[in-house]
Amino acid sequence: MNSHSSVKNIIWAMVMVMLALLTACSESQFVEFKNEGNPLIRHIFTADPSARVFDDTLYLYTSHDRSDTDHQAHFDMTDWHVFSTKDLNTWTDHGAFFNLDDISWATKQAWAPDAIKRNGKYYFYYPVEQAKIGVAVSNSPTSGFIDPLGKPLVDKTGNEQVVGQEPIDPAMLIDDDGQAYMYFGCRSPRVVKLKDNMIELDGDIEPVQINGIEQYTEKTGGGWYGEGPWVFKRGKYYYYMYSNGWEKNTTLVYAMATNPLGPFDYVGEVMTPVGAGTSHGSITEFNDKWYVFYHSRVLSHSAKQRSVHFDEIGFDDEGKIIPLVYQAPNLNPETKL
Image (tube, rainbow, N blue to C red; front, side, top):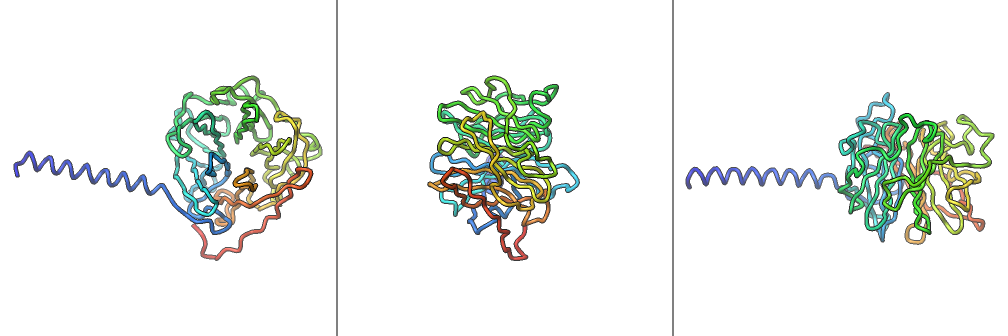
């Protein structure tokens, strides 16, 4: 064997080793797991679950509470995960499919997201820096998302009177007539129409009117609007779910309307409090049943290291949600991350 061949063989061997390492790193992002009851996700801390059904699969888009988080920091989160299932029993964690490094105009606070499908593409909406909402697009629901705008879709900078004091927590709805809406906001609920391309606003950002909550405050819970909107349609009604604050006994509540722009009328609790410090969730229909997804701090006992749960939920003859009575799971003391 001549020296030239030896060098080629060495280079080839190095290339193969690098490919093997890259493959191992890629595969390590994917985690298969079974539903063992609540909490659903136990191998990492997750929060703010957005449940979406695309074709025959349920996808769960979540924020990611780091295991090494600085508990003094204000929810210092850096990426988002997506999970999928076809039967609610076997799940796949597709890894951190989008993160702050993929965004040229943001550096911190990767908070509660949502995603929607339209015209064969998937659109991922995310809040950052407590002040901006962006959008990313992909041909896949689990990978390949890119920022088509290179700037925020919604930006608080010099615009607080229009977008509200904290434009976070985007939630999407495509109505039966094809019109897309984005709901968002902390303390100041907002809604805006989107154009068919899903990356441009279509008209003015408007406040969301919720009737019957005037007597409530941030400290009292009840129907007070805190954050985390989620809107879905069932029959003739639009359901506007949200968190009513951050006190010990605050939880997910909802209002109803017959128009996606409201006004909405406050109804009551979606579920009893879980004591998470925050409440953020989603409701979706999958295989002819309805489910509510939410988070708790049952694995960590920390408000900044949360875990996603889900439960079946029902409706009464008037279309109102039958409130879910939360039951904390009886976990083995050794069940922890």
